[in-house]
Length: 413
Image 1 (cartoon, rainbow, N blue to C red):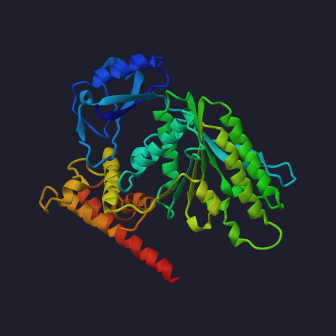
Image 2 (tube, helix red, strand yellow; image 1 turned 90 degrees about the vertical axis):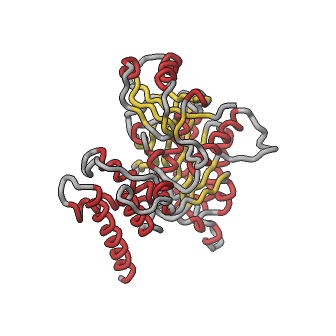
């Protein structure tokens, strides 16, 4: 049995070519070629592909045991053809419940696959294969629902909780997972939707109104879920805002916070009847989440700061992007982490060794901060349109030192 190789094809929005026809042309175009996992093609000698295709991406399974150079003949290729939605984010509003007839922004709504999230999956770098495991779990969840596996025999709630310190990419990973599901399951669902709930907007200044706001919000979710041909992914960011632990509240009368927790749990239970709904939640403060909500999550995945290997890959991707636009001289290249960590210092690997040392100095920093460092390096220490890789790495090292000093200064205040 041949292993699976996923190939994602972005079809141009103006193209009306049948999916089966385009699939055959893509397979023919890739046949006989040695392909690298993770590579994206944007230019074609084939005129038909040039007319109908934006890009072809050979997916990387991030398995360290997988061979990176592949030929499609040795695999069972899964060709995923899709068009990117260009509408962007839409705002969903509900009545505030404050008695003034005003509406509040309750959620952000995307039709998937969205151009807003194109390339997001590939930009997220984590230890081991966290992304792929989460994707497989979500696909299994929908498969069990589709096949009518008895929930009395095997229990699953279609709820995933991502928790960890701020800035580690939990929200971005949730959006990337929703986008990836929309692509992988395009043959099962005609379209997909992502609804990002604004937790903080679901609190009213009027006593007992917050629970009602939650119910109004989930009423909108049920409207979307009525279409069984649509995949609906609900993202509740900073879920602790809605599900603060009930044990932290005391008193004879239930507080508005407790009413809100109860409303969320009730609405989650009511969504079980919709097999096309997945719920993703993120939290920076896991201890503040109600245990009943945590218990409902099928997966509780910790997302922490990246290890040195992840840091090296993140910084290398930033450098490659700056090379692409000639802010860094495109000459020269960087070794992969696995290669540079095994290579002694030499003239050919000096830049990679320098980046490896910078990566070690960055240990403990989150992904958000890491991706900001190249910008700061250029702004503070380069201060000209372009530079050599050597000069940029020197600037990057100075930026890391400055960042650490700035953080220490803040702690002393």
